[in-house]
Length: 434
Image (tube, rainbow, N blue to C red; front, side, top):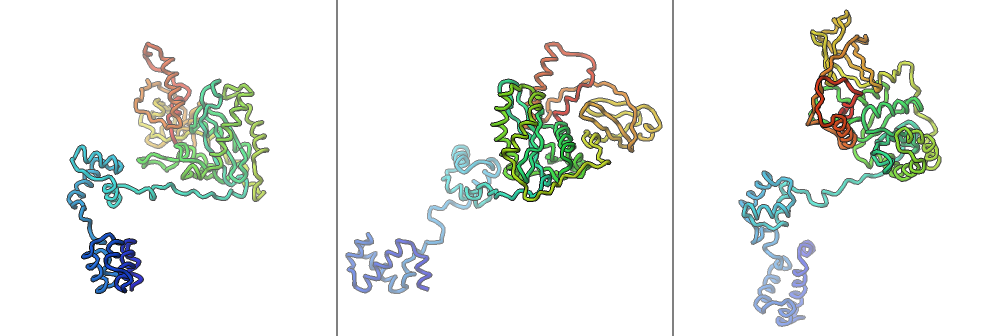
């Protein structure tokens, strides 16, 4: 019991205990003890009396564990927290204390307010705000088991050409570059074209590993309709290829580290070759990829290649097309991409009235309308494009969107064009997400 009491005592109280024990055993005088403790004689006698009657417990402060004499009233605490929840819910303790004092006349110390906010769950202390620890994971064992894909927007041509995006396909097991392709922006159609080239060269991997870009994942919180797949995810599903989205950039560190190497080496190689266009840069990529893999690729833990060959039933043409469904009206019309399409009054067209038909929008600009696998003839009815002032653009596509707007403004000139405009070459794709 004595040991437990000693552990509860402060350093000052332990010092008092040792001196009072010596005083009680007459090894010290009252005057010497008072001088060492910095107390008056009567206070020493009071402590000695408590020690003789209660032992070490008598020297522990009676106020320990109780409320401070300077504690703020509960009414002040409740009022301050209510104001913070209503008006300053995302303020830090320092700024919240300033606003409470300046606006509401409640003077509080920032440390007091910080403890109140932590206790109320409004603020998180520094230890709890530490970033998660991302421990490294082992590589996949086989080539084609997991292929990391990502787009890297960069000034690849420096000042010789526009900013563009490099699509990177890298094997997780070997860090081997499987496919590189320069595109204008990280869009669905760009990934359609690059992935088709990958599959034709290597076959079908088990899974692709990507970030949470809108091409790969439905990111709208209110997206309640549909099957939860993006256009790219739907294409991979048709080919029996999985798509996995990483929860952090550290999780796909293989491709992220490759970006840094490419932004150093590839930029300089393009400079030496004088490349200033996408076509010229793409022509140089096969030789660069071969040299890169010879230098940096690792041997796989298992020599088995898990790429699967394309089957006879794998129709890449239809798989990598933008597909949307529309309900055919009684007048044999439907709307898509701000255009009205009028179907020919054939037997197949009449049978599809009130039913869902599928629009196939191909990367080369072709567009087909099918009902139960049967292609329906149609003609277009041009419609004036309305300017969408609230168009949503992902931050990774902001550059191409702004470039497109500037080009449109330059073409439009000072005078407004009147009358219907012909359907262009799929400018609206830049605004689409899967």
